[in-house]
Image (cartoon, rainbow, N blue to C red; front, top):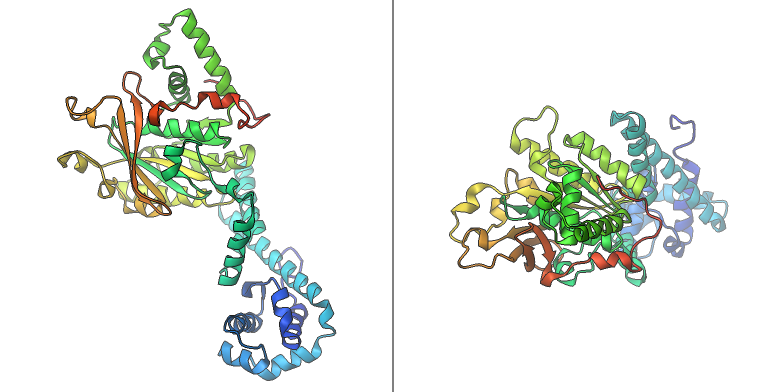
Length: 443
């Protein structure tokens, strides 16, 4: 019995499932249960043995099941007795449903225990509970997945015309060739100061938003006001310094107001009060459930503080693990995180960054599905390179190619215009923009 008072296991139902399949082996394929659904160890072992027997193309019978299980708790005579005690195999679907309901009860009970152990209170406690129950609903906590179930799920996705909806893209082909992502993926943008990593992340974030994906930006440095000022500069081409000093013509004021009106329609949420790791995790969970965000941008890792942790190596490790875990926590999101590179890159002859220069933690590379390095040669050699060019080197791509994306850099204003001067402002006026989204005010 679980603490809630509901039965978390049903011996009779489990025995009836095992016995029914022993009686009618062909019914095995009609049972959508994994071994973890069985509470009693001997039944779990018997079901695992049946799965292996079917994969091997052999018939299911008590003797073969006992031999395959290789454990004294799985006995051929007892299996035969289970088959003989089944009232009718016609009720197999009801036995299966009963076993599945008991499994769900155990999963919910475990989710409640994990929620209490998290030590949160109030709204944060509710958000953790929602995430745990969402994981239960999707079957994430159901344990090891067999090859049969995994392949069936894959083929269902392959046949599903709507499955592409799970892919998060900007709609900019040059970028999406390398940076298309699925919920749960981690994109790391790493660079030295003045290479434009923050500007690049802001450009990419805006493209995702314009392409219909609600997005959260967590600022561990900088403010909401500065973020939106740069965004308006990117939209209008007006220098941020002139915007800050209000050194504007009437026409430019009108242009800024038009850009602000477009941005208000966007499902873009910015938080600059989450510089402690626990605060950031709460902000991400809240945005997932309140706004349905599909992605999170974190700027940047080295400025996130962890209570009680002072050593940078340990702090970055903990931050990387926590952020990658919350990205993979239902509902999953794409995580785009910014990181500094160590000074070792400055000793290279061409100053070009690579994977070995990720600052502070090997965990950063491990948790990342894609790692990109913005680089502006003009910063180092103004005679050799074009001031308007940024190269984004893709040094790691878990499910795609590595290579280079050439971006247009507005060096007088300090923002990325996109590949080949691609600016997506006009998308906000098109059909891709979600309707009735909550408006975001300009800070």
